Image (cartoon, rainbow, N blue to C red; front, side, top):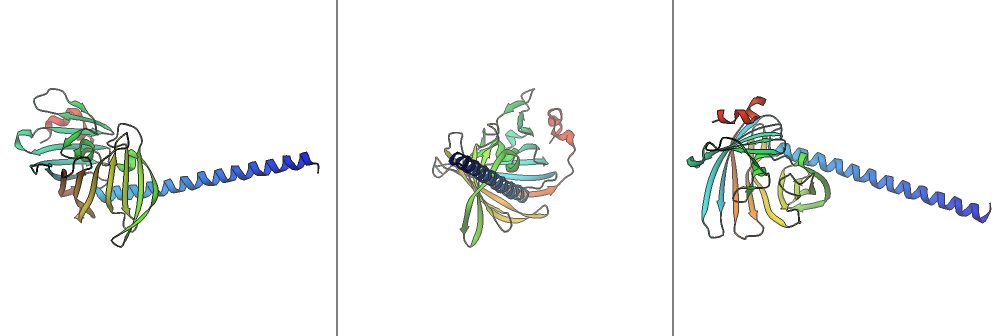
Length: 256
């Protein structure tokens, strides 16, 4: 074998080794992403049923000056892609209804003849964005990956980074802690497009609702204004057979 042939053979072997290493890395990343997707989907099903359901939500907001406000909503949801959010209190706002189809969101107001288009990221009340109530589909809105693990109070958690599939979703990045054993969500951090931490969320008071043990209390804290938070309390959750016609703009006026 000549020196030239030796170097050519060596280059071919090195190139093959590099290609193999790259392929192995890609396969490992795909496997990790598949694991992360499965974790997020299971946590989604802990938070809310995949079937049609109804739930009542009270949101108590406390501001830095200690003033407070409570608002109440009824949510009808089907398959993580269709939701109706109705204001039940205060009485002055009854009749306001939000409709979500996919990532499209509208609000119907009795004094306005046509529904108004809204952003999922727009603030609804306190620390709660429209998308926090109308669309809680982490598995459909984000590309997740497992970034590590953490042990908290003796429980082992996946730590995941969720990156938005596009700019239409509620948050651009989420860091999410999910229990490795039962897939209960523990907490989340929500970030803006500029990667600024906006708020923190804790999932608390897990109780049986609609066939599974689910968090019935969410505490959302403003990361920019100390002392400001909203507490979401979930009650009366039940499975419902919701016809598709409910989730149309023409049907909004018929809901009460």
